[in-house]
Length: 221
Image 1 (cartoon, rainbow, N blue to C red):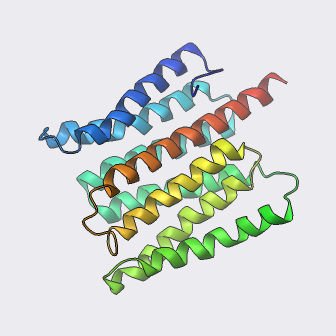
Image 2: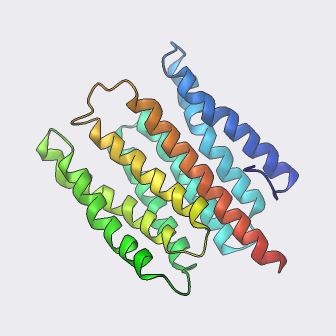
């Protein structure tokens, strides 16, 4: 369970996060007020950020809280201020996440894992560059995707569990690539929006669980 091993207050926050995050796709087609749907969208990851702050016991815990808070801010700004402003918030979160993961590198990586880490950034950026129909957007999208891919690569190379934090970061990258695909070959695909949201939200949840559990375990040893 995502809340296993957390304090009582953090467990409650994660339960609320799940309620908002998983139900958001159900309200996408409803004619709710814009302010309400925007708050609902931001609440899922914002509650994870608060839970991370509750659990924080040092620099790494606060970095995780900042990563998630910037993600929640990006969710809201995408709706209220547009794509570029929202992307800036997300990029700030990715840079913060990279700092967290680089300061928690694994002592050693198998050759296959090194290969994956080295390939994620160029392949992610190239795929993103190739997707938009409007080629004037391709370079900017590739630059942004490189930050997301670097975040995913460093998460995979970190000491945090790959089946949680590593996979969660890769899901985040996949979500963004789907966004870019919707600007090209997947334009009009009705399944894309719920898939984008679920990959993103569940990715953030897995990142939270993997980092928090690892930090709690280290603090009790």
